[in-house]
Figure 1: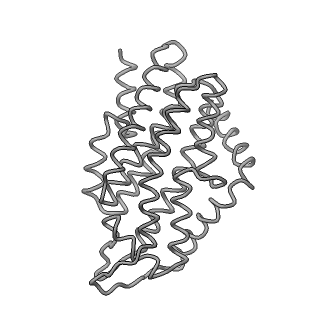
Figure 2: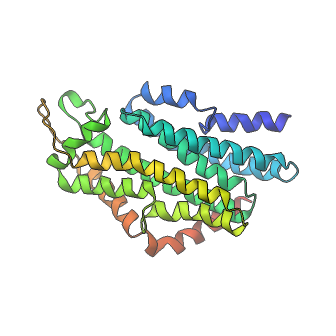
Length: 276
């Protein structure tokens, strides 16, 4: 019983459905930098402990696989439908986070060294994409330094201000979708591969359906990037050189991911073997 209480604690910290309600309020009630912390650093800090926890308890408890699979699937479902109806940027990011955590949790249910490596790889890619997207959000400001992109329809001003910036963000969003040959494609392909290798075909079929559903809300933002709307406010674009550099760097990282992907696998494998 005690291990299940610990399991629920880590599910709560990772904002896995149905323990996800706090993350919605946290995203909406916090500043953008604090929201970025919840989306990246907090998950990265909890994740290594969660890996060790899963190794210990999955060795003698078969229900671990059922719970991991069930909570992962529930997170994907709630994250997909929740993000689909969001109009606020932070709400979209919160449900998108729940969706991606569900994908990672599915890998834990496989209970193998390769699946743990795949989960760690997925998390690294997710962190890279999130950091780059938050750099973009933090860079777009108007008078008094208040963030402008509070609603998804507000993204329509980006292409008018800076076409290169809009193109970079579009690449990052396409990577979130999992479009090949971007990095997001490889992380999701690993999940499909793990289940197909175990001859479990129903999960990949369901993942394809919900991936198509998730593509709609990412494409909705991309479309808004290139829709011209009249905005009754004088805008400025105080993007620093460092923000430009990191945003373009992460965009290039996504496009050329297939070139350095084998090296990343080797590094993550060494990290995981060391921790084990």
